[in-house]
Image 1 (cartoon, rainbow, N blue to C red):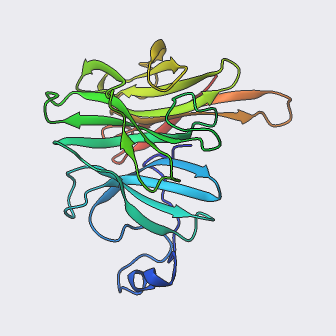
Image 2 (image 1 turned 30 degrees about the vertical axis):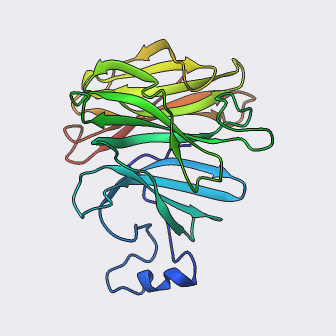
Length: 257
């Protein structure tokens, strides 16, 4: 699942070696914080072999937005976190914007091997050499997320847009394919793509503009929920609306289908 920028994650000291961080005078004792420097959107929340993985937008070089990369931490319980080295770093001027992560249990991507399904991160890349275009990329890990390799065929989805970001990917069992929900923020649209292997994507449909369209649409999510009191389930489609929406701060809206 992806946890959008609207949510705050709980954290306390991950282990004895990190106790010093949490004894600092202004260090939050409950909310997750990186060791140092800038952070924003949490990304790619995924559970794999006894660990919850939290990635987040991170500037490894300073306390202001920039050089966006994916910071990384793991936890056995989503309360006690252990910091790991940054998973995906800005490289050649291409920044790593928000996205999601999945366990490719059936190795549809071919990145893993027998008995060891890969973790696959799906993220928006943007920056040097692209004319500031935004496009979707993937990276994979075969060692429980400790090291990551960017796919040599990136980008896997590029429509030539400067406003095309924040892919949320999930496996759809009924059709045996991956579904990506991704935002066209200034058009107030969400696009849906399908793939058998996380590399080749086909456009399926779009949603919007609809409802609140005064701010930009970012960090979408889609997930299935049971209907209380009935033997049925519904899809919930969520979009986060950045400043310029109702009120002053960011907002979130959802529709069911």
